[in-house]
Image 1 (spheres, rainbow, N blue to C red):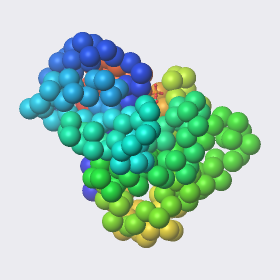
Image 2: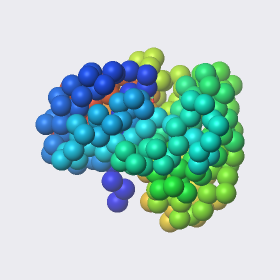
Image 3: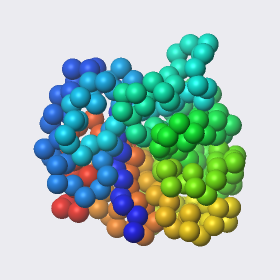
Image 4: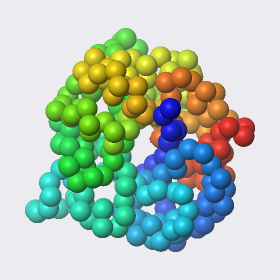
Length: 251
Ligand code: PEP
């Protein structure tokens, strides 16, 4: 059985003060939750959030990591820096990174390999744009993202990897893929992993859905066979909304 994982992606939101307020409101709301709960927060919030989540079941995540150990890479943050703070998960290859910051399958691959080498757990994002979807290219795009983005990963690596399938047209738009559609596409991603890394790896791999997930649609999405969790943007910024997704079983 794959343990569901609900991760918040705060993006470029929340000052330290706001971050601590959000965590303090969230903690009691998710205290009895069954899924694994992660908050991926801006670098500047990591230390304060680490202290605020102490004693709770909420785990700490970052929103990116450098591919190099250290050195002249202005603006980048290394795996060691994250590990020392207590970061466990790191989002890699989010569509906003690909769209605005020139991330490619190759840079995603390099960052993910570094995360794995250092003992961070990457949440690797894949997904098609609206144009690609309308041109019936979803499968082709996902295949390229998996083959090139996951190049040289070993079967063992997958024990520490989470994939987030995020159709780009559903991110922050209020448009959600239908549960059936998301399930089918995630099933396709699982089949790609099976073909390359084998059925045991594919069976154990957790694949999240991301794209306008909210308390009102979480239960339906999470009921799908292939969907093992959610990567949550907008709804992660409000404690009651995020908790409503984490506690989807009660909806
Ligand atoms: C995201 O950015 O990962 C995301 C899923 O955003 P939203 O939930 O706001 O669509």
